[in-house]
Image 1 (cartoon, rainbow, N blue to C red):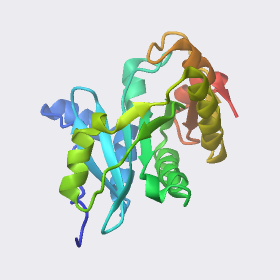
Image 2 (image 1 turned 180 degrees about the vertical axis):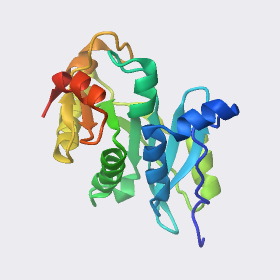
Image 3 (image 1 turned 45 degrees about the horizontal axis):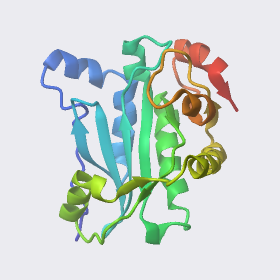
Image 4 (image 1 turned 90 degrees about the vertical axis):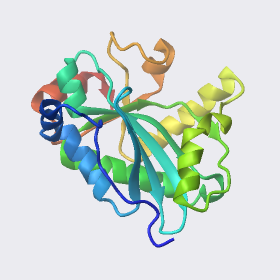
Length: 221
């Protein structure tokens, strides 16, 4: 293959011109655009129903990872500010045979660099999972894999192991520049235990003052 994917950026696949214009004038659009400009990152899906974008990390011949970022409300920010200035790292996965070579760190550095430059607050919850990648040799196969990922996905077998691995992964997020995040009241995704103990965030120094002033009290760096 000469090019793994034709890179494209559709954002939320908005059909209304006014909504699209509002999106393109947001900090979030700048973040998405910076990711799209990375030569080894390609957007493969943008869902307007879940506000989720899936990106694949690749060389010219093979995919080595993917990450999924979505837009969700983040209290106490109002929804418009949250959609514009924050992004939720929903999942990130590396191929098993490429692990241990620093590719997870490379992907995170790309994501955090885009967050810093654009002014985004990136946040998420450390929750390890198992993803058994099949053999992938071309773009069609990676798209099929992502469309059928539930066949290859599982969580760790016990709560005890999940907590242990979550702590280890949280330290990895800290090592690449993230802070701990105790999610403010009103955020209902995941469980309260995970929101209180395994949250992480990267708050750009370029983020709007309102976002910084509102969210810094919930960070531990």
